[in-house]
Amino acid sequence: MRQREVELRNIAVGDIFHARAARNIASFICVALQVRENTIFARRITTQSVHEFDRTTGVEDPTNPIVITSVAPLPEDIRAILLNLDRKYRESEDRFAEDPTWQPTEDETRLTKDQIRALVFVGQHYDDNPI
Image 1 (cartoon, rainbow, N blue to C red):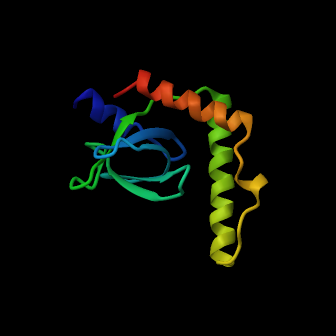
Image 2 (cartoon, one colour):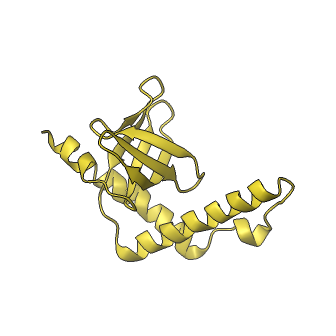
């Protein structure tokens, strides 16, 4: 088994990893929601979109690929900040689902200094630690 496949197979529920859209180089910081024999289901933290990656190749949708590019572990403080950011965005999605007229306040949408620090950190960290 190739090293890439080994690292992809080691992804577990709750792990945070990075993927990139091949066509527009968009960054996807994802948290693994469910891991099956051939599939990794993950949620993109910043948009709450759900993605289904092949567990062998790390690719979602070969026609418009999003590819897992790094599974490097994060420092615990960065991981905690990202999980709190995921919770914040998920709660906003839930509120909007309950009331389609709901609009978040400016304070609810503004990133904290720690959240900005974490997002800047992961950009470099994942680039420095590809699979």
